[in-house]
Picture 1: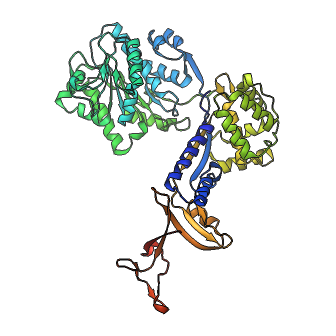
Picture 2: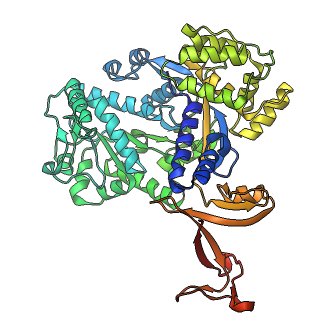
Length: 562
């Protein structure tokens, strides 16, 4: 079953909170029990440790043409049918590919996980396959520039899987690229190795816990190989600083002698702003000039998840025009295309989920996370919602039922424009359906909507944003009506619910034995001799140290509880 984001988020947050017990490993049974209760997910949703959740919904991307259609239209090379791991592309990917094939400058501004990389990578690989078939002389065809080496390395792994056995040379040239071929400490497959050879070696390396220890014959793994005439990569992955060095150092600049430079790609284009953006724009012009390419002869591509959308397409076009040095009319801004909603006509105002909502939410999470969720979820739907769900087709049955559910529709409608805090969502949906819909019920509907499917498409695609932090500083109080201390996860909690307290102290624990200690701040407290000093003298030879905040010069004192 595909990942359910609500269930996954609940599990991640719950595991993190349980880990927080290690910060306060109380040996005292009462304090330990209080800490476990306070760090339960149900309690922590209402404390400063958790900010959120904020909920949004992703829309399903519109399907575009098939790989075979793109091959038939001469957009992709015929061999791409074997290389691409799926049959179709998204509509925005197809639009981008057709624009690149037409020689347009392209800004692909679509969300995370939308396949921006494939939008430019498939046309580039197709062109390299055609040059291979034509026995074209060696030379750099495409330069892919990433703002961070981590992104460049991720792209390198993707190219290894795609280009193994294709005889298309590629390389990553960054600061840590080995200088000599003898310095390469990964298994480099010999020339003529097939994709099956690469996958077999890779599978063996993974079993040995060496997932990045194999590279195909097509990869140029060292600077020596990259610089060797006749061995230059067709596709070069680098970063801005390294590209600047490549155009400066005599030993590297020859890499671009005779380079075709038909494609120039900048990923995460929104990072190129201000003076850094201006310097990078100059670098682009220097590279084209050195390779003898006019602006219209190099297809430039920028990608970003945030740079433009349908409302800001003009701003995105202006940015790409200035960044790449091409007229605005030669720029295409590609944004997301969505499938139409799948809602039946909602009109049934659902009654509340039956039973204790906290228990129902926990039961639903357990059911969805089970190895075989069908029977558990079907039983839950029957007991909590009085819905008849066939366990053999529970996902489609849920979709059919929920697609006409007024509460689920109102949740989706509320989240259509932007992410909402949970409390805002609760208030808006409750007003729309004329009854109180608590937070736990909202979470149940989101979980069910993510699990409900028609084919491969879920009814709801929730995105959960939760900001969780560790215990900032536990507090112990001794209220007048309790015999034992009361534990608080934070000063904010204690101040919000402050009662009639005799004592209020910060508490710490020994990580070895779990003994807890109180931390307090005193005015003019000194302990440099056998007994404490400072403070104020009082009758009978005693001394008094008044409480004082640390910010006002208080001195720290620790004492253990007996």
